[in-house]
Length: 227
Image: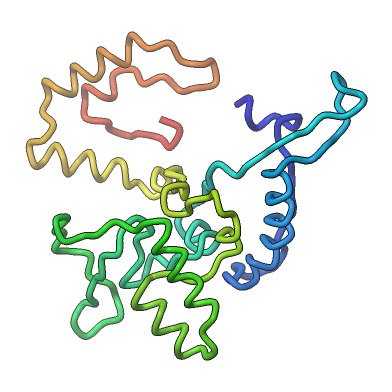
């Protein structure tokens, strides 16, 4: 992919450690990065090949793309095992009786209120100003939010611009299980699978992409991650 060529990638830093990084530790790495982003948003003067005398360059953070655990920590949301884990809405899930596992059943979208940038920032500020761990824990359960250095970027909306990388779902087989479920429930039948196959056959893909041959029309058997 063009965006992954070394001339198009800027390595800001690496977080070492044998264990998964904590949210508080991630903020230590984010702080100097946010300092630079604030300056870049206003514009800095640098020399370039076309402007040897210098020109003003502006830059802004567009989105954060991670898997779910990393995205929640970087952007100041709770873990996916929390009862308030969604970074898009404030739905409060219950726990399964007699366990610590979250009960994700009973979806009623009409009762879900979407998070907003302003409310999310306010909740993060309240968490930051809390003076005890007990108070912060209560706020995490109540609001599903903690402080992230990204909140210092006034233009950045962590609610809208936190993007979950789906590749891990492919590795876990989530896409295949969803397809099996849709077929079993009658949402997708053989006629639709054949129609999908015809669409794929007319696609022109880059040479490094794996082409699906007859697998869609057969119900996606033996799908690999790159497919």
